[in-house]
Image (tube, rainbow, N blue to C red; front, side, top):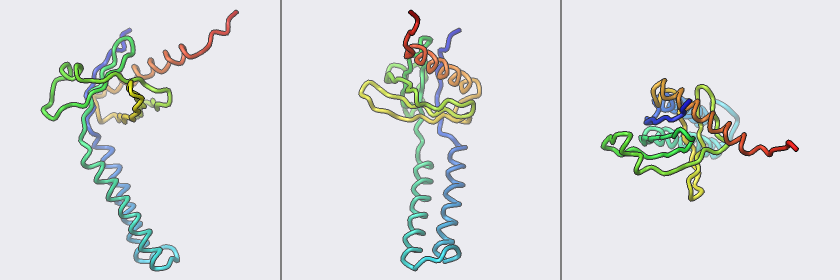
Length: 166
């Protein structure tokens, strides 16, 4: 069985909707705090808390809204992972392989059937977390990525276990 897979990871509309909903709720809480509808706080405390809630909501939504980075991930049949940022001119997947960097999947990665939080580390020891939701790739690519990442984690876990046979 070959685990080789290549996929273009698009920005998630689902994640944008979830962050938008969270931001709306947080702005509502800020309004409730500012109008003294909840809690028994002084005027200065209400202003500070309402401002803090509003600034977190606006920052989170704006970061989610303007994050339009597409990634291209290549996993070879041996489990080697290459990651590239796709250029704005929509390069082909094969072209991005030459400009990609080799990364390693760390064991702290979360690999669930509906969510991949891949902790990837390059040769310079820089770590990034790549979030992959089912709406970011095709269903076939998501399943292939899920299987490949599980295989890599299991392979590294087997390699890390000491041989205790005598």
